[in-house]
Image (cartoon, rainbow, N blue to C red):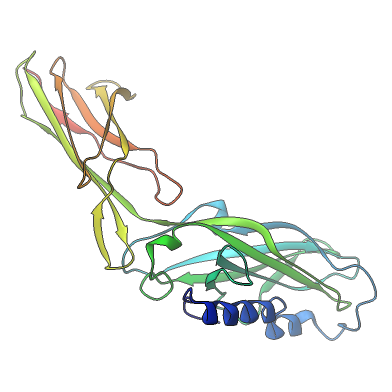
Length: 271
């Protein structure tokens, strides 16, 4: 059960809001509440936990789709019939809806922890070529979550929690010359780039702070030597004095739209 991204034009955004409103209690999912479902006679289920991708950010490159698991845990005296979850991006659902990510399944798989509490799981496949046509979609997404009890009562929240969808980052390092005489200069270059969802290529991530780190040959611990910033093309370049054999690497802490990444160590033999 998937639909493509919804473009941000006034007419389409309003239509998208209506679509999302209608999906707040998806018919196919609600129907799985079972034969006991009847007129709601009291308070709806209580959703206690929503988990998207195991609590980790959803990171997408330029072409490969990624499937993640999502789940809703809810409780009700009559038991839980089903649960649902979807991600949406935008300011609100009235005029600012930009994109929606729906589950693949028409019905959740629910496992009962007790007579009153169940966890209902679904999967969502995100295809950067279909679902993420704009780089501005990177960052925080809202999570709509809900559940239906076996007595037919419902609950749903458009803003239950948030999840992050990020642009995959890449980082390189090269320390030279190798080998080098003690006291001479080592030049450490590299590049920080990230996925561009609009042209499906990787471009330099400019103006970002990156740490140059070093560990001695027989050590297992890296220490930060200095912090530099990527230039206008995402490139890195700095110099240090050669003192002992060891490994040089770059580390990027990440941003809200781009995940952290650290290179492997590049060994330099100091003579």
